[in-house]
Length: 98
Image (cartoon, rainbow, N blue to C red; front, side, top):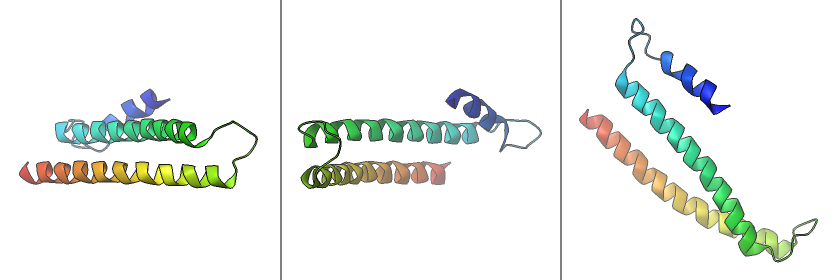
């Protein structure tokens, strides 16, 4: 699962005689956290939008349900993008100050 790949990532990338670069490790941790957040967000978004849009669980989605889910996910992704843009620009500022 995630643990094995997480551990193996740490060693690689430094290459400086096996010395670990703390900055690099922090970057990798941040990436892992961002990935986990994205997965959780998708999960929540799917749950919320399905609950909001689908009255009765059936074999297939009708047209209005599909439209509702698409709109709902669009709005969700918009706010997600806003947040991650803000986060990324903060990361870049921190990097510039290092």
